[in-house]
Image 1: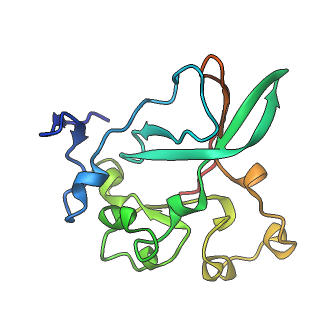
Image 2 (image 1 turned 180 degrees about the vertical axis):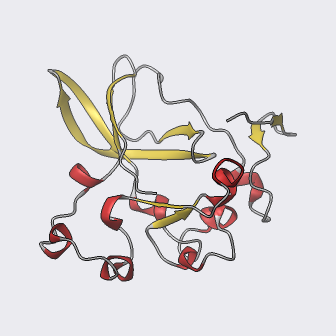
Length: 179
């Protein structure tokens, strides 16, 4: 997908994808990196921002825990639950939400219809697998042995990124979303 980018009055790169709200400036910001390389001397307190073209928006990661990947000590950062919170809880998500989609009032789903409509020609929402960290009303509609045993967790059903802190390199990225 090709993006028309601009530089705004504050010298910030932006897109013109999200035009439906007064918060559009926030939603159209291009933040940090494409996720392939990060600054050296990474700190646990750092928040990571990557731009995801398939979502037409940035994804942010926060420190979760320390980890070892193929013998390399890393900091594991995950997409926190508030990334999927409804605009009623997280106002930063207001400009992403199509007002015609009633699921926007529930935590756990993101409306990416406007982003993908030109490609797919249909409404589209995204969530963690099995609505992990989502509103319980979403889970009630679907029966699954995993959900019945309440075995959903971020390790197996979330998105996370491991970073070797000294060099800022990522030996592992696990992306798990449901469309």
